[in-house]
Amino acid sequence: MQIIHTDKAPKAVGPYSQGIVSGSFLFTAGQIGIDPVTSELRSGIQAQINQVLSNLEAVLTAAGTNKTRVVKTTIFLQNMDDYATVNQLYGDFFGSHKPARSTLEVAKLPKGALVEIELVAVI
Image 1 (cartoon, rainbow, N blue to C red):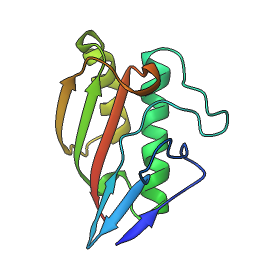
Image 2: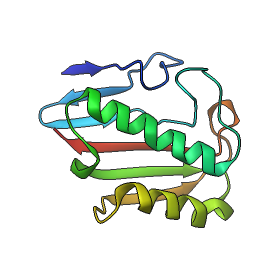
Image 3: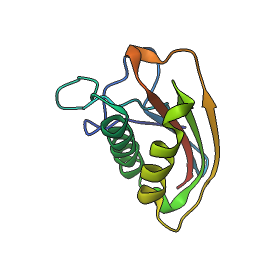
Image 4: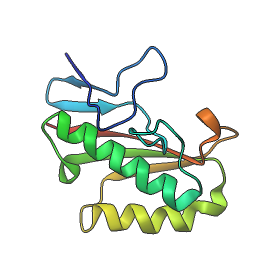
């Protein structure tokens, strides 16, 4: 196993890694919309989803892979009413690549985040 860390994504705020490579797969921790430079949570669903996807892309790059190699994502939403917005920005990010995905509404996310995404990718 290999622990993945990059300064281009927020530092882990607990006892976990940004990502772990096991075999030929990368498993990421859930990312929320924290700006890695300011350590502040972005405001609003659009800004947060864009930051989440940027953070995940940084972890993918640090692991030596990219978004076209993502096989599965899980999206946690604080409010399912944001589904259409998240779906549009997520679709724009992945383009024609369509990983398997689950989307769940949850009662609460860390730091009051509106969205969190974790993923699995092939190295």
